[in-house]
Length: 82
Length: 427
Image (tube, rainbow over all chains, first blue to last red; front, side):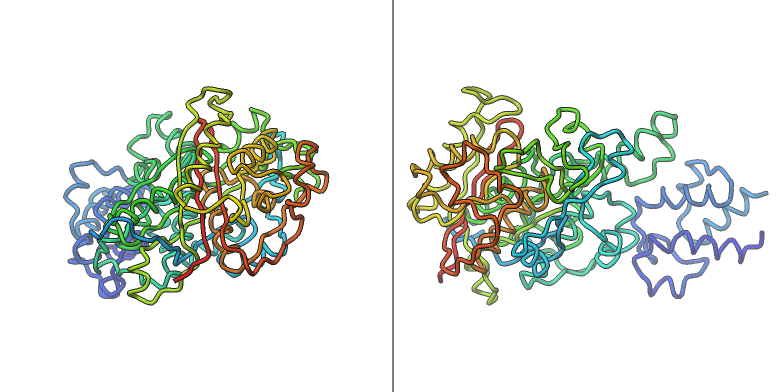
């Protein structure tokens, strides 16, 4: 799966949790999930569960803790799919 | 902080009931005697003897208008009901919703109770995952949905409330207890504005235990609108209900300062417990406790019993109805012929448990404001012990433009009692 496709799916997963529609309109790989998109930090747990289900991968807690940007999530998924 | 002995008024109302959502619709439903009791197939499928109940209609569509996807993701039905009624009460009071990055109102709080709470979350989401060793798959929202204070906590976040925010619980007295506590808090000058009331979901897991106790009606599954029969000779138990009722209470000083519309004034409130003695138990009220509670509220109100125009009773349609009416008569020291008009909102919507006091106080305030007493359905065959009160129990709406004072009481498992006295507002 190409990076662009993964990015699109990650954005779809994040969308219901995003409290800044403006930031979502200009989202990029560098967007900070909590700070820029205003996702409640507690909901990162739910985002990771969605990622596991959608991409059929298992995300270790230590790896999940490192996800700060949208790009971090995309990279994690691409690595997990290998 | 303000001064003690503040006058407390009702400036906003929010109601999500089995027969109506919102004030205008609820007023119409009360006046028209509209029943919100319907056949509930899911109860029949689960082997309930009582297969009728009161559930607010169109809740998904309503919730989508009030709450974002992210908010609803972390809310069970009880929390959704509470939020809708609270947002309505706040808005009805003419108060603005603080944006997420806006200010906190340090003088506004919420006491919104629930009797049972988020048991649907426990059954449908929590237990299955934990019992199959999938704790890691629970997600982030379990605690906020199963914590007893989930309903009031969510409301605080939606509105930016900065005063006391809590969820009380005293079974079927919950909603009334919340209103009395919030009233006293404002009266003492500890808050300027409080949302107060109760909410209860409609989960079959909430209702099952009552069905097992055989305290729910089981004779009217084919005629739901006739199932809730408070004060009737043929009453065979209550009908389970659900929803939320929330009052926006405010110090008169605050209401005046912002030119708010005032529905009514709260002039008295009292809470107590019968101690499970003298005839009281976990499931039955000590009549002395009931009478002391009513008398406490009336004494605080400073009105003569004769000045009370109507009583919106607890009146659930169990064997206790005649005892309750006898307690009102004894507490007020009034013979049947001189009693206030007696009526039961539960005849329209069933018994909404922790939400009952909230919804029924909304009804009482609207009756006080508009000057009417709604009729009680299904008691044409009045219980023989209530024969002497027959002309005090209207079966259809009675217009009373001069109605000044209405008393509302709730009684709950645990032998707990609450009574609040509303008066038409006079500046």
